[in-house]
Image (cartoon, rainbow, N blue to C red; front, top):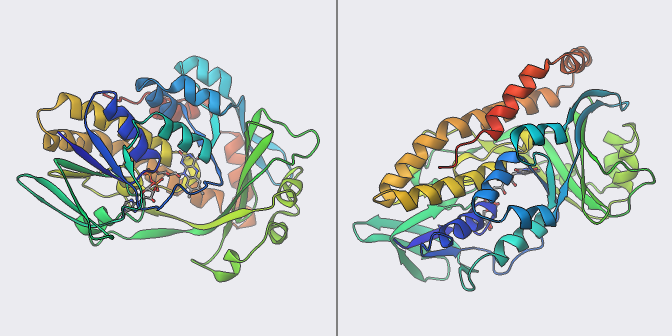
Length: 380
Ligand SMILES: Cc1cc2nc3c(=O)[nH]c(=O)nc-3n(C[C@H](O)[C@H](O)[C@H](O)COP(=O)(O)OP(=O)(O)OC[C@H]3O[C@@H](n4cnc5c(N)ncnc54)[C@H](O)[C@@H]3O)c2cc1C
């Protein structure tokens, strides 16, 4: 059963590793002509770490990034509204649950685990068709590849999904986002804590990385695709975040380069499997980043798919079972993340005060149920 994977992102590369560990033939077709520098950080939760454990690369992963002790949500003045002891949660669930890594470091690690020649660059898929003999994949350069099965891990703007489900569109969440990394840390910066600070219509997250670096993201309510937002420099962002508690303004000022994009997802779809073709990762269930679960779900998908491909009689059967197994979980995460983002971006002063008070009163049992749902994932 030869498998073609579209997209050499986090999901596609993890899948290729998982398949190769089962001696299943796989080729990854990636549209980028060369690997691009990936200039932001990524938080990975226990479900992703567990999936990497399943394919034997947990140790390597943990050595490339930072395990963080605490997660805190603060108000604009810096008062902690809710705080979670990540080490205690890790002990309870038997897996590191608050881990941060530079995207480039994760990418390099995943590539290093593949057999040479697994990934073909500069192969942008433009079309495909499936028949009894397999799937023919057409590329922008005019070439065609044939495989038994096609797994589309080609991200939120998936060409494969557009062909299979032409009416599915991305949806704008109502807020735009900048991301940055700086290694010029302010004195006294707390490297043991991931935090989010919720203001009114503006929010900033801080995630320590290895090598005395910090990754941050900042979201502001805005109309879609606003050229003014696109043009802002780090210093310009102080008009939104200048009055946030220390060290937020200082971290922004100390960042040279930022990445900007509107926050979008796709409303949950009802089908991932299409005979010899299946959608996974963002192509199947792109989510807003509010729960830090997009990449985690792509990594889970990869491990589940590889396990099913190994045990099922055919790819068609594996893909159908994958859809049955994954659609409920991913739909719930996409919907919860959407709602969480709406609340985190509230602007109304009364509602934001009420929100902040309510967060500080959330019973431990509610948070525990959410951890259980996220970490107790079945990967078989
Ligand atoms: C601001 C922000 C912050 C985030 N933070 C987190 C976080 O902390 N934790 C977390 O878990 N997730 C986070 N995410 C989500 C995460 O980045 C994605 O969910 C994840 O990258 C999805 O992986 P993927 O492999 O499915 O898709 P992608 O990473 O998008 O990879 C798709 C790949 O397919 C390639 N491709 C595209 N089209 C074609 C084509 N036609 N032919 C061939 N190749 C193609 C692309 O070049 C790319 O390499 C965040 C997202 C955003 C926007």
